[in-house]
Length: 482
Ligand code: C2O
Ligand code: CU
Ligand code: CU
Image: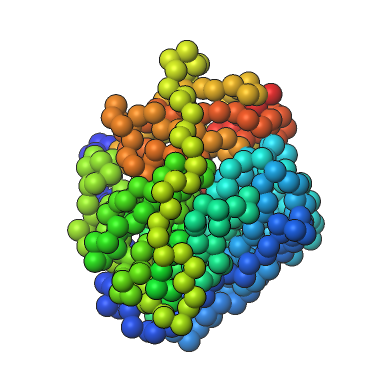
């Protein structure tokens, strides 16, 4: 038997066991109303509590799945945090394994970041102070214990954060939680015939990342979101382990992009489709003033860098979420805002230091046979929690050139925000033209990164692929900022 070369191995892996998503018909028409996570508004109390706990969740069918969540059985509350303020968090771990709560998208110093170095032992708690001075944004939190992240997030340890300055009314943006300001966590999951969630990471899933056959929004399959007959804000969080969505509305009405990972754009940008990779968030406005229902759909994209972002998978489309206009809901906003924020600062200077990173999935028969171990690396080195990969200067700006391999990798950096300067030598896509902390690398991207918060070598920041099976497999590194 001859060894597969890289290209063949990828084709081989992509060709079998690739779970397809159920056709939309299978998920529609349940008539169940979408529910939203409880809102924990910490803007006045300036404190909140999270408790990692176990639960039993019935997603579909009659059998419940043993799940884990924060303050509930699966997922966690949405936490609203005031910027330019200190908020005290208290995270308790009632599980029998270490967990953490990483604030993905919050610019907080390394010791408060909640990454692998801030794992919380069973029965213990962790009380970071979140001192925010960043623009309003949709961020999220999830467990981040090295080697366990993919499984812990799969079974529920994730939730959403709203960073707010309390001025959305002045901006003309919808802000009534669960009425016209909708928090939507997109996840694909796999269920067995009994309706229990399954997560079997065989060779295929550990290489390509896990993809399930059922779409969940806020942990619910087949639900429909009731919306007022006005303008609705959707905060979309890709909380999937590996699935990349290419989103559009089935009736081709535009998605008006108003914010990316790091906050608002200067003005809304109307797009008919947009890519959302694991870890990324967008805020979009959808205009329902005509009273017509709509359906958010996604193309089923295979993860291959060769066809670029627009390369297709099965060529199929599946339903993400139905929107049903409910005229009894109050309409607060019925026109789109003209502007939300000022233009981005220009970080395209050539004088900033350059750093090159190459994301690599190691291939060959050895890897094909093994189900564990470090199959993934950055610049040839798999993640080592005891080794610092480099250090950067506080308040500096660097240009990182990040190169991928045959797959697309959503590349994320903790504790910073960046702009995408170029994507394969071209202008970045519209959804990548704001402040970001995660970007899909298909080929090569060039980023301008600002290091605004310190991270000592004892509590460094991570950079990694946000396909969680790749991250756990070693496609991660760490750096200090001082
Ligand atoms: Cu969303 Cu390092 O994580
Ligand atoms: Cu993060
Ligand atoms: Cu990856």
